[in-house]
Length: 527
Image 1 (spheres, rainbow, N blue to C red):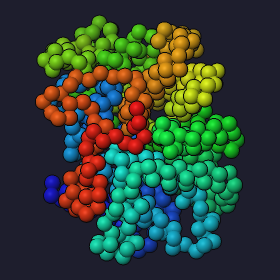
Image 2: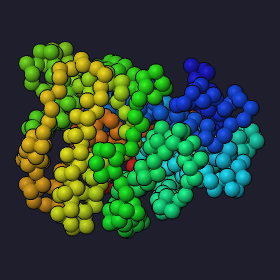
Image 3: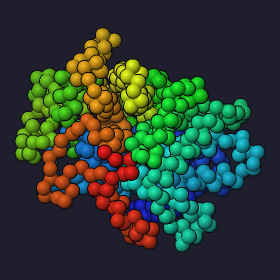
Image 4: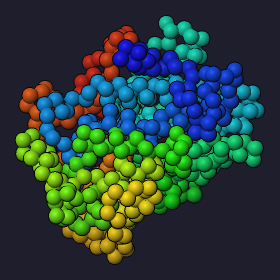
């Protein structure tokens, strides 16, 4: 444990100056163990360094998510216990440490890139753009968890020549971090429309890029859809609302210059091709199934049952004593009643062949369905009901088709064979009471529909985004049992900083200590 604590403390300040993986996606050696490295190798190592937090794996799901965000979003059912809304030290430290190891890899990539000649930097500019887009995606998640974070001065130990005294990272204001990322992403989206990548560089980029496989078109879609997500996230902030509206309108109004994923074939994700490589979902099983982590939540299952959601059978299995009836665990029951249900074999649980035992489950970065739900919200606020309805329904269709597709690539048949869906079934679901756009009389009711479908889609596959959206919109409205035995009686608004910050970065931590409460809202949480 002492060794782990030391490593996490080091990572907190971004002191790591070499890759943490012994192998990269294409079996590159660790740059710390060779006399020289390259832009290409550092890029591949950087992408690899957080892959287990993108492709479903043990550490992310069991240590970080199992008793935090999956509870807070009610995408799983759980037995109520005292202190259940307090973010555990292991969860916080794991994600925080992974991010700063990841940021350190980016700093080393920057250092190697800076050592190139001006001509080479120009030729290999695509590497810097792609790496920064990927960095910003993950950075957004850390900001959404904590608020202010060490960022602009973090990870500089190598650049500072190993001088620890000048490398303690200061905290950046969360709004400032978001604004900087939005500024850069806007610039990247324009630059990607004019960039020229010569064939030799393109060939190398294709080999190292295991996200978009060298496709500039897909990097454009990734960049613009990430902008849409972040702009939507800040759309309620008075200082950023006008910008959010203007830029989302530009993206949606010009698909040639600002393309986004429109169908599932456009989804931005890390595919699993070879189970013998480092990129696989083998750890998903223990991460999700250990300690009864896969029980279905009552609100989600009831909604899907009531409206005959085609995703129900793809997402869940029925209990061994349930006689084929889907049933979720009620979070408002007392622990004793919940324990009876857990033990009687009537509760549904996450479909093992779709999720936890599907070793080919990809790492989702951005999906067409998610983008469509952001578009639907924008159009609704803009008063364009026709476009909002179209985007909303397209989001539902893409979500349903995606869940059936991901089951189709599974190498597991533990669950019963999945009955295919059809356009008829999908259209009937969209027309169902509680799902139909036409049945929602007000903009508020329609926003509820959008939020609910986004919650269903993001589910356990994009949990960090799901929790952020639930806090931002307060929709769908979920009820939790109040934990009267703990000062944190309901799910938190943010995560605490890890104890390593208090111990090893005390001067800079002191500047944010007053905000370090689970009740402090992230800046975009204005409702």
